[in-house]
Length: 342
Image (cartoon, rainbow, N blue to C red; front, side, top):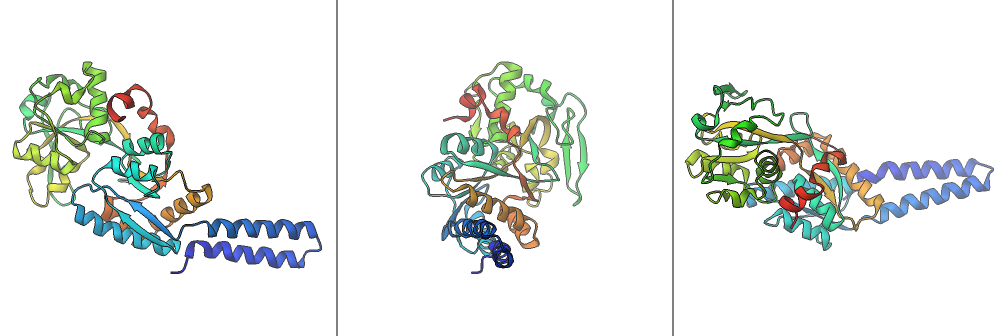
């Protein structure tokens, strides 16, 4: 498998040697030779096999299939084998990065921060969706009479599916609708996603702590439960298993093909503050030059039709950009220790 990424470097090295041969300066020739050796050394340092760790967002079999397609595109770009590792949780990916079992991890923002803090991983890229590198967590309900403090509005998407909102929770900019959170009774049946989910638990829990003084959201509502995923929380509220649910915006669309009325029956009534998108972390055991190579390769494939299709299939990623580390500042300190740290 040819390594296309290093072809320009090899051409540049050849040009350096040619110029050195025409030069009358031994010092210049020595410097050029040293630069060429350094470039060759960086290329040689790339492992023969890399492991790409993905977390199942919905269906394990499907994410594995889609992940293998992404791995193939990345392998073609790098010229080395790329294996796919699909564990059952974000924490398992963090452990894999910590123990040398994974080199590249696609993670949610909480787990990205956790991987940096606990596994020494480097946060390098963030996903783009709808042209943005951030999003909001959404609160939704099948009981708008209780949680909607104003009229419910309905908007149709490009495919004609209706989605309902209230309390100003439109436009995907938060926070919104926070007054409605005070209406949650102690016996509220809340479908959280996962304890390590930024939009499905972490940021909503911070919101409840800041607004209502609730320090342990899961314990404060004993009628709640962790559904295990964003589609599952929407399904739980749609089916009436829970009255309120949490997810990223807008996870209702995941069920729209099967349940055309999900956007109207499940009404979004509040948003969290904006959250940095999920993205890519790299093992801290990799040399800086290798990290730079992998980061560049991922950006390169995101700029191709084939690569973008593979990224979209895996996590609906519409592009990649360099991570804004300042966006992760909300994860620092007591909030992380209380809600995100383990």
